Length: 146
Image 1: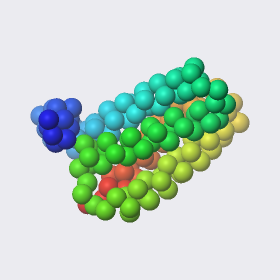
Image 2: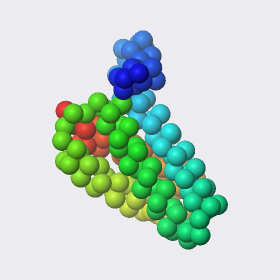
Image 3: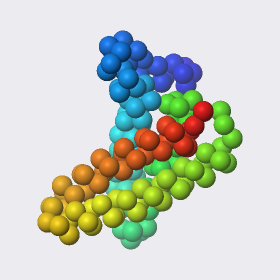
Image 4: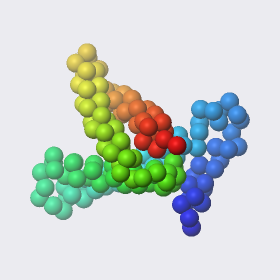
């Protein structure tokens, strides 16, 4: 099965949406969300495995699982979602910059919201939503630009 067929199997239904909805619920947005969920699951599974079966300290295990998930997310989005054929070096460099920004945004938004009285769980969820939007915009119009 080719990468195009796999991607079409998950996002092809968006083509049948009414035009006003399809303008906002694009194939790339749906694919990005699916791949984001998948790689988040991989991140958590790797983190669990590293903590269960290795003596790695939490910061090292978190970093290793996060880096693996981020790399997988880049490859899957490049191949399946944005179907890019651009040189990897430029894309990967832009992706690395965005991931560094993600970290700073996550910490900044979560810290800022908790400082004004928002619960940690709610602050982290809001930060995740903000970062996901930032990621999609960056991926669609900067990392995998056409």
